[in-house]
Image 1: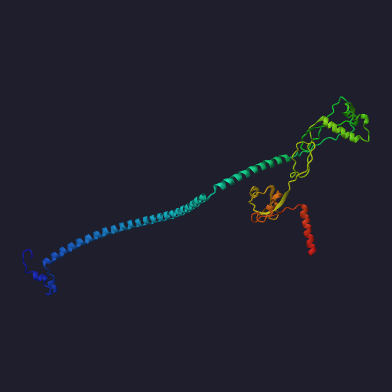
Image 2: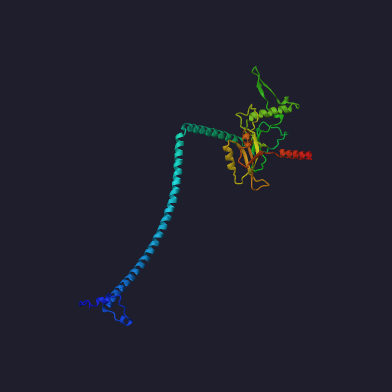
Length: 370
C-alpha cells in the first residue's frame, strides 16, 4: 500500500483517539506486521549478539580473574623477596656501619700509637725473656747437680786379725760387695791394711841431708797403736791414690739443699744453703681446673712454684683441693686477699704436729669455756 503510493491508510495508522472493538483488533494492517516482524528480527539478532558478547565477556572476566590471581601471587612473592632483601641489606648496613666505626677507631688509635714506647717495651720483654732463659738454665743445672745415687752399697767388714803380709803379696786386696736390693752385683776395691808391724817405714830427710826413719816396726807400742794405725791408713791412701768412692744414700729430704760440688775436695769447708719454701692448702677449686692451668696462672703472676698436687677432698666431690709449695719470697703475693680467683681459698699447710697441736688447743679452750 505504501509502495504503490496510496496514502489513504496513513491516517488510520497514526490515529490514536479512534477506539476499536475487540473484533476489530484482529484486523491489523499489513504494514504494522511487517515492521513488527522486522523489529522483532532485529531485536532477536541483537539479543543473540548480546548473549554472544556476554559469553565472551564472561570468558574474558574469568581469564582476567585468573590472571589477576597470578599477578597477586607474583606480587606477594616479590614483596616477600623484597622484604627479605631489605632485612639482609639492613643487617649488612649495620655490620658495615659497625666495621666502619671500628676502622675509624683503629685508624685513630694507630695515629695516636707511640711506636717508640712499643719498641722499648719489646726490647724490655726480650731482655726479660733472656734473663728467664738464663735463670732456667741455672735452675736446670742445679737440679741436675742435686741428683744423688739411691742405691745402697754394702762392703764386707775387714777383720783386724789379718795374717801378716809378706813382701811378695800385693798391697790392695779385691773384695766382692754383697748384692744390693736391686739384684745388681758390683765389685768394689777397698784397700785393706795389714797389721801394724807391716806398716812401711816413713823416711824423711833432715836438714843436714841424712835420711832418718820416722817410724820403724819396733817403735810402735800397744798404747799408741790406734794413732799409728790411722797414720798408716792415711799413708796407704796416699800411696794407692785410688779414685773410687762408695756411693752413700742420704736418708731425708735433700731437695732444698744446695749440693753443688766444690772445685777441689781438699781444704774445702762451707755451710749448707737451704732454699726455703712456703706450703699452702688451696680449696674451692673447680673440678674442671687442671694442674697446667694453675701453673700458668701462677707463672703469669710471677710466682715460682716448687710443688703442686691436686686431690679430691673427703667430704666434697664437687670441688678439688691442692697442695702448693712456693718460694718463700713469693709468700706475700700468695697470701694477699685479691690474688686468687673468686671462690678459691688459700691458707697455710699444717703439718701433723701443728694440726694435732691446734686440735688440742681448741679442745682445751672449749673445756675452759665450759
